[in-house]
Image (cartoon, rainbow, N blue to C red; front, side, top):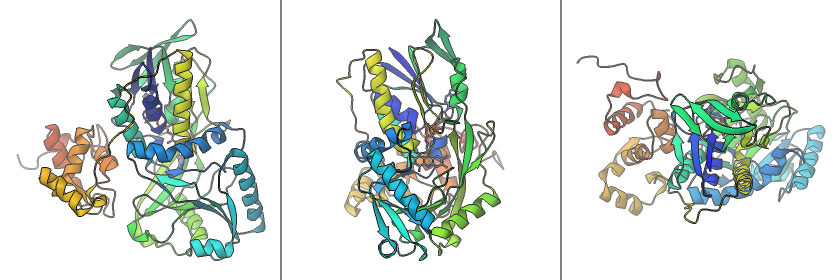
Length: 475
Ligand SMILES: Cc1cc2nc3c(=O)[nH]c(=O)nc-3n(C[C@H](O)[C@H](O)[C@H](O)COP(=O)(O)OP(=O)(O)OC[C@H]3O[C@@H](n4cnc5c(N)ncnc54)[C@H](O)[C@@H]3O)c2cc1C
C-alpha cells in the first residue's frame, strides 16, 4: 500500500506521521522548499478550547480532542506549548449574553472548566485589561504553541519512521481510473499510489480538481498582526479574546511562547486567486491596533518588532472538509480554517485510522514516537550548556544575540534539513528577536554557505529568487 500526502503544513505533517504508524509506504509532497511555510507559518498559534465552534460542526468535533492531545504531543515531539488559559472579555450587556452562549456551546462540545468571572476577578488576574470590562469567560485549557515547529517536528519524526519526503515538488496531477486513484504526478515524475490525502491548505481546491472533484471552493481571508518584543512579557498572561463576530473570533491580545505579545488578526475576504496576498495594509494594521487597545489600553506600540499577515482558507460551508470523497482512495483534509491547527492532531489520528481500516493495514511494531528537539542553550542550566560546549565549541558561539542562538544550533538545524535563512529561523528562532535578523543574517548566511558547500550568493532566504547576496564586489 502506497499513500501520497499532499501538503506539509501542520495538518499534512501530522497525517503523514500518523500514517507511518502502519505498514504502508508514505510519501509527503510539498511545493515549497521546506515544511510549514503555508497557512501554518502565519497564524495566532492558539490551541483553542473549542467553545467558539457550533455543536455539530466538524470544527467542534475535532477541536476539543485536538486540544487534549496537545500536551502529550508536545512532550513526544519536544515542541513549545504552554497552557495559558484564556478570557473572552465582555464590555456590554449584549457581549455578556454572548459569553453565556459561548459557555453553553463549549459545554455542549465537552470543553472542561469554563467559568464566567466578574469584573474584579478578571482585573485581579489580568490587571492591564481595560477597566471598563464587565465580565470574562475563563477557559483554562487554551494554550499557545509554535505551529511551524509542530510541522517540522512531525516530519522529522515521520522521517525516522520511514517517510519519503519530497520538498520543492508540487503535485501537478492526480490520475484516476475506474473511479479509483492510480498515481500522482509532479515535475519530477509519476508516482503510482493507492490513496492520496489532500492537505494542500489554501490550494486544496486546485488539488481536489486534479482528482476530478469540483465541489470545493476556497478563498483567502487575510488576518494581519503586530508583534511586540519580549519586554512586554509580563503585561498579559492569558489569551485575551473580545466577544466574537459572525466572521471571526475578533482581534486578540495574546502572549507568545517566546515572551512577546501578538496583536491581531483582523479578517478581510480576498478573491479566490489572491492566495499569496500576505502583505499588510495601513488600514488593516490600524484596525488591529484599535481592536487590541480596546482590550488592553496601554500596549506599548513602540515595542513593535514585526507586522505580518496570514491567509485563512475559507469555504462557503464554513467547516472542515474531511474524509474519502467521490473517488476511491481520495481523502480530503481541506478547508482548514481556525481551529485547524488545534484540531490537526485529532484529525490526523482519525484519518490515518480510517485509511488503515479501509485498507486493512497492520500497525508497525517498530514505530518510534519520540523526536528530540534541538537543544537551546538559553533554556539550559549553565552546567548543561557547558557540557555541550565541551563536546563541541560551536555550542558556545552565540550568533543571534536577541534570542541567544548558537552556531551549534544552526549547524544542527542544517543537519536536520534547513537549507535557507527561513529554514534556520523557523528551527532555531535565530533572527526572530528584537533586531529581526539585523545583526545575525550575514553570519547565518556564512554558516549555511560553509555547511552546504555553496557560495554565499547561492544561499536563499526562502527558495530560488530570494537570494539576499548578489555576488562578489571585488573578485
Ligand atoms: C490569521 C489566521 C489565524 C489562525 N489562528 C489559528 C489559531 O490560533 N488556532 C488554530 O487552531 N488555528 C488557527 N488558524 C488556522 C490554522 O492556521 C490552519 O488551520 C492550519 O495552519 C492549516 O494547516 P494546513 O496544513 O491545512 O495548511 P498549510 O499550512 O497551508 O499547508 C498546506 C501545504 O500544502 C502545500 N501545497 C499546496 N499545494 C500543493 C501542491 N500542489 N503540491 C504539494 N504541496 C502543495 C503548501 O505549500 C502548504 O505548505 C489560523 C489561520 C489564520 C490564517
